[in-house]
Image: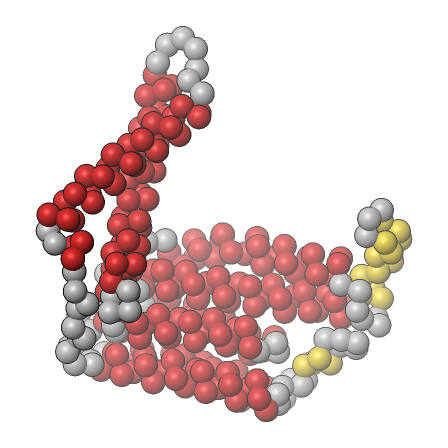
Length: 287
C-alpha cells in the first residue's frame, strides 16, 4: 500500500486537506454505533477509493483488514458479560469463569468489527491517496528537523529491507554451515549506521544542519482543496451532531434495541453525501 499519483480529485487536493478528509471518515466510524451509519461510512470509503482510482489496492487492504475485524467480532461475545438474551451456555472455562454467549454481546461484536474495518480502510485510503512527502512538508514549519528525520526514516526503511533480503540470499548461497540470523541482523544494522553517517555528512554540507524555519506556503487553494476541506468539515459536523444529539435508536446492553427508520436513514445519507460530494469537482484535476 504505497502512494502513487493518480488523476483523481482526492489526489489533486493538497495533502493536509486529503488527510483531514480521510481522518474525518475514521472519526465518523469511531463516533457512531448504529450499524446502518457504519455501513454508510464503509460504503463511503469504498466508493471514495474507487473514485480515487485506488480500488484494487484498497481491495487488497480489505483482505488484510477483514481477518482482524472478524477476530474482534468473534472475541467480543466470548469475553463480554453483559446482555440478557443468552444464545449459548459454554459452561465453566478455567481462568475465564462461566461463558454465556448473549445476543447483545454478539451484536455489539459485529458493530466493533465493522467499526474496525472502516477505520483500517480509511487509514489505507490515506496511505494510498495522500502524498507522504507533501504531508511532511505541510508540517515542516512546526518541526522541520522532525519532518526531515521522518522523511529520511520512511525512505531508508525500504532500502534496509532490500539490504536484508540481499544478505539473506547471499547467506543461502554460501556452502557449509548456515550463518545465524543474528549475524545478518548485525550486518544490516552496521550498513544502516554507515549509511546514516554518510547521509548526515551530506545534509550538513548542504546546510540542513543550520536550516531556518521555512516561510508559510503562499500557494492558493484549488477547487479540490476547497471541496475536500468542506467535505471534511461537513463530516465532522455530522459526527459531532450525532454524538451530541444521540438521535440514533441503537442500544446493545442490557437488551438489544436497534431502530431502523427515517432518522437513521437520514444520518446515513448525510454521511454519504458529505463524504462523496467533493468527488464531483473535476476542474483542476490533472489527467
